[in-house]
Length: 105
Length: 257
Image 1 (tube, chains in turn blue, orange):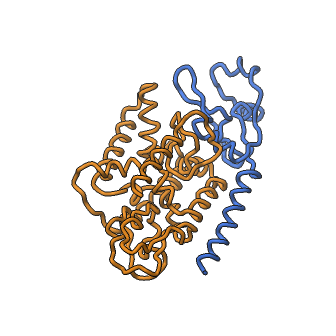
Image 2 (cartoon, rainbow over the protein chains, first blue to last red; image 1 turned 120 degrees about the vertical axis):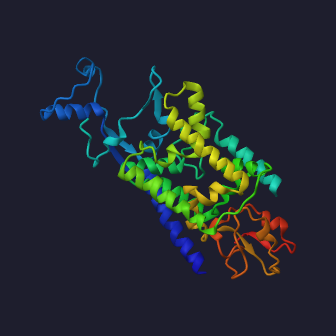
Image 3 (cartoon, rainbow over the protein chains, first blue to last red; image 1 turned 180 degrees about the vertical axis):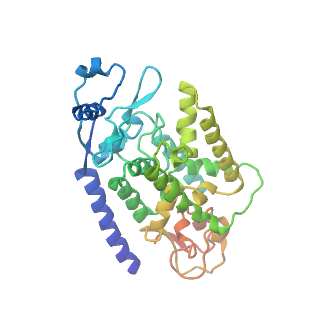
């Protein structure tokens, strides 16, 4: 009986956790380009080859992501391949999630 | 039952890696690397490690694993996990069979706490000691295929991965389900919930304590002290393979606990 009561309590808790995480939880993800612009605005210069010329082509893409979107972004489906064979995320740099101290490099 | 289980394992390994579509917003509670070009679902351990690296807990992922653990316990380990199938097949190879000390099965909790949680949190998921960078499943499903497709310049890390895979394969040839018992961090998570699982082998009244179930148990659980499930001393290890039910002379084991 004790086992069944514990099971019921735990099931309710994990169901609530899964529903909240799967449908309601959101993350704000910054794009690297926006990070560069923000740092530029406070007087920090970052030299990225080609950025000055190409920056007009890219709009900042920071946006809210649901937890399943972030899960997908971390998996194979979330990555694409450059011509040189390197893998890159299809999503903005997830290390720039709000609350995480951005790395200036 | 063993033959049926083998067929189910093969079917599940194929289904999880069909590659015709990818549904990687969802984690399936088995160790199946999502960096594999053909995998359908995300791996819970890989996802947890990446989230922890961001200083977050993936509630939906932990929740899915917990729901699986609370309803069917480690049944997925026995019937669905592709690496469980690999280990079952490896054990059929004639090789020196050996026992391992009972305390070694606590290592998997340490692996989860250190390589899956502590390393990405305090260092980064890119750190060489992060679990996914050593995982034998990722080596089979991801590192080797990608190295063949693209070639690799990182010979050292690929060599380390292959060495770990080889060592685990040899251990699995000599000891049944070695990786599940000693190393698997997902097995550690599910083990914690196995005692509360809804679907769980249980002794009925006809049990005569002959110990036949102990002799065939791949997870080496023991029976005989109380009537809490079939396996009284290590129920957290039971993978519900039901080999014990097949061997029980009095038919006193049922799956629904």
